[in-house]
Image (cartoon, rainbow, N blue to C red):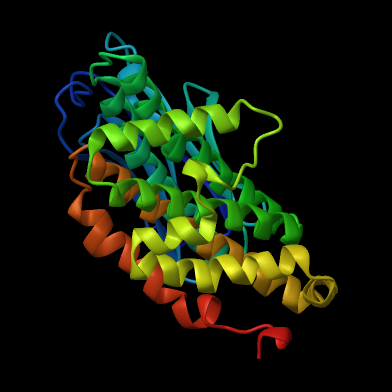
Length: 326
């Protein structure tokens, strides 16, 4: 079916009738699907009442778009159009107006990274909304919850920056971003290692002071260096500091390491390493913040999506070595 449609480039449209599709019921509902040779493109309404477009190509990977279905006028039909072109973009239109766009690169790793990024960012946004509902009974509470939200919001933006830097061949910038995300992961685990909540709130206050003081030593949060915080956060976090954090620090500070990034194949692998490490650090952060505010990360992320992505690229990206690492 639909074999005459190309997975490389095309478009299709259909209509949503509000008498048939209820965007208030919180129920999953398939809306449309085509099956061109080499892939599938389908549109669904998910349990969050969002319109989700999934582009899945055998040689390219998976890409998705999301649009808030609750914004649709319930009193009239709506035309949904999906267009795609490899090397350009996957685009969603509602009533002729573009509402979502994502690049389609002829690169399975990059497209899979975009797919995973979208999933973890979507949950982080929900977790942020949940934190906003918590009562702030003091300035210390306000600082504490703002500190937790910073890991979710600003670090999430940095994930996008790393992807864009790597896509634009700015590998060193991507590596700098990855190191920042890893330090953020160390910080949130250090916070979680502090059992007393009042003491955790004091650390959040210290973070605000450091952030707003131009003369402050930025890496000395709570009077401790990154290495000291990693050690206090436990063995796994200390290993993160000794391995991934140290790797990207070497490329940032060492001219010998940076010199091999002049070679295109090393630049490409370095960018992939930054994307992988950044997404791993961000997933680590989101999971840790969820635990701190006693929220449960969906099993689909923990047991299915995260293992799919990280296991798929562990050997070809995370464990692959650049010449100077051998």
